[in-house]
Length: 454
Ligand SMILES: Cc1cc2nc3c(=O)[nH]c(=O)nc-3n(C[C@H](O)[C@H](O)[C@H](O)COP(=O)(O)O)c2cc1C
Image (cartoon, rainbow, N blue to C red):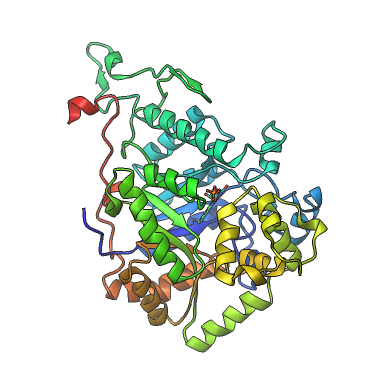
């Protein structure tokens, strides 16, 4: 398959009081009804008008509590103390949209595989083929402590477990053959037991009998997303992911990453053109360039609280920075103690130059807009920058992070999408019935019938 000629557009959503930009809730026009389902339905419909492929929700299974060994600062400064359960949110969003893909983050470290397989298979049926799973290994000890463990498993062990996890989930999704249900009312035969398979899986981490209690879904298997940034994470993504999310601070780094990740996919024996690499970016759009620049300054300088930044940095690195000053240097010794998103610290360090990276800079990168590239300007200017990244093989599309909800996406759809459509980079209407079809991805063959299918 050759590379598609359209951008893959993903909206980065949070079921929370705040977006990934930690000052978002303080923006004057940020909506505050995030505990009401109509907030998410409204945003989803805007994204669907804009032809987005997918909206996806990130997740964490704990309130930030690593900084100072307490949730107090997260609560005080609104550093995502709230995270709603995604199953309920996506079910309601599915009911109020028709085409857009629906993605949720589920952890391979804290949920059992049967539960995850069942959740996403159900969502895929109920949404008529629009489910996507962001496979994460989770980040820190506070999540472990909410799930009955003292501390997070070591990094590579998490990925070993994730490998076995996704194998089991894939088999559960395939445990019903596509034509297993007969619904023969006359004979009283509902389904053919020869076409519904037990797994009897007994591995290093999991024992699962199966079959799944949900028949095979419209997409065969939901779309798989992965966003690991370490070497191990990249290999895992190369083997399993349909969509790979990245967080590269500059186009140069993204371009190199793109080449390297595509090679890894090729090495894993898959067609690299079918797997989309999608960097996370912010867009700040205005009716004029001056308006956009003014908004950018507000986001960079006025809304982020330094304590919110540091609290969140402790979370993603699984390290308590309460004993450090913001001007301390990020040394090799310090990095060695970080066990959360290791790739993130290394990426920022490389971008800034290791000699001068202070904790303040690292925290700012994480908490403000500096972490990823940002496209700032009028609709045509932003569309031009996005097109340039795409044409130069730095990405296959983008994961758009929001400076605030719902305004960031409303501005994008109103001002940038028409420009992208005029350039042929974004669809004017959905042509497929499922998310896989809209992404141009094949429906996976059933593992239990693979040899007879071929
Ligand atoms: C755009 C993007 C979204 C992510 N969303 C989540 C998330 O919702 N929950 C999570 O635990 N990790 C999330 N991550 C982190 C990774 O998926 C991964 O779990 C983490 O980077 C640790 O693996 P690593 O050491 O291979 O980087 C995200 C990363 C990126 C780039």
